Length: 334
Image 1 (cartoon, rainbow, N blue to C red):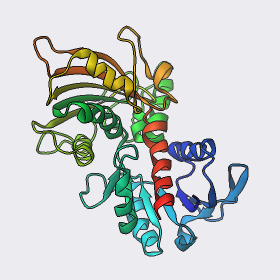
Image 2: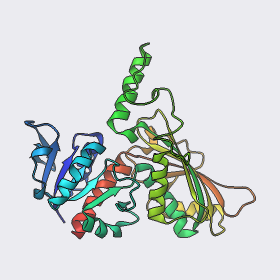
Image 3: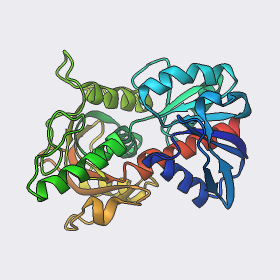
Image 4: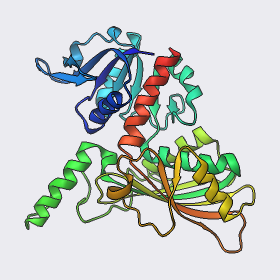
């Protein structure tokens, strides 16, 4: 299983994690084409002990690659995705340009890997958003065992959801404020450091944001619609990496607390943590390859109502590893 891979955005935070993951997994590549928006850049990227020279994206012939991974902005994806597809590339686009598009294949590799054949046919696939992955992996455990009738989730998302812009802005603002200087939002509507934002994205007529609506849409596309619905509220918190969620569910079948805990403990996607264990993204989530589940509680007087907390490394596990797994699925099925 090998392929020729072009990566536009190899030097972004996620791009670096993708290359690290390829190294860690000893993923065999026939060739790698690191792409840059700059012309005349004389640099190379080392993967698995081999150097690959950087090329300008506007000068690159996409027919040389089997898969093109776009870790760029929406504007760049809009400009280049069709060009890559016309040259025969299967495009994996992480710009969120196509998020929520019902005609574009969305894959969470652990759950709906079978959709990769449709993605190859259409030559376009997108990974689910990191908070969608976190919610889907956790809810799939309960959905398979008991059925989920209804779910409400509050997502406390770290600034790395916005990539380098988020992490660099939080670091920059923190430095300024600690030195008694005014903060600089750098494109955000309010200060990031020592602050939180009540929502992420643009508020729609439904009073959900476009970001929340995408999480809801992706979760329902992968798991199916819940009879009594799914609601998501996303809040931006001043944390560099690691997403936390508080989830309330109504199951279709009655269950005991121990049965729900056992389902999480037995799943390959989740790790059940002790209820009295204090979890934090810095100490526990970063570099973790599972969704951490804690504080599982049953609503008093109900046999179907439960709540719990989730924590996940959104950048490495939710994005980079998911992207590499999607690329591997394409290589296996193409």
